[in-house]
Image 1 (cartoon, rainbow, N blue to C red):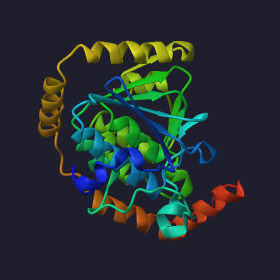
Image 2: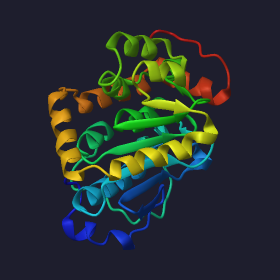
Image 3: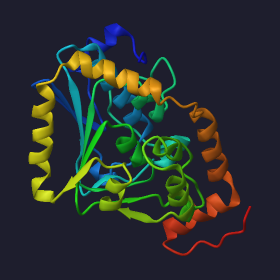
Image 4: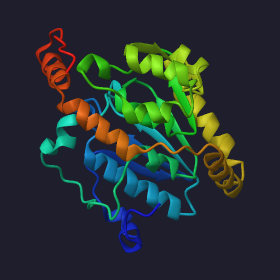
Length: 272
């Protein structure tokens, strides 16, 4: 994991984050998505910030794990397509552009310290990366998970690649092409969620898992995760998948789907 020069990583505590809230406490780096007003939609700079934190965690021996959460009622609504098309507006993040291109799927695959995701709100589309990339996902039992891209004239290309690492492939394909919402209980049975609990118990259950893991060897865990990732490595070409998303966005159906969503009406598909 080498996106930023070491001297910049060493200045971590002086950096300003626009889309993440960061707190390091008792061996744990708490990363909280902090864009509730936009339903925590993924902004390109959010990805840069995430890569910066991940690299810092990997290079800091005092940090043993990551706890990933989110502010607001929606954990993540997916990618901010306008922002990724260069219409993201200004921000006050001090994190510069990386030295190497960041693709969010491979970014998570390069993290060898355990990531626990606490899912307390609904998650959609590209927000699935925060589940597929985590090693443990603990969720509230009222949560739903959605892949609505095909209803907007798009398709979850990169998400599909990561989902098939943790779920049955046929179920992944069916979910992607039907675009429905999946109850958290079913997502747990399919392996996407580790466990789900009543909302009032979620924080306590997360704390239990963290304390249990603190009693284990961090070195053994990191080596184990690295070995697991090597054993399960796939040649998912995220550059190609991203190009397919761009093709879908620019298609007539893609443009119609985005307009219909914005105008709160049913899309009229042309098949082109």
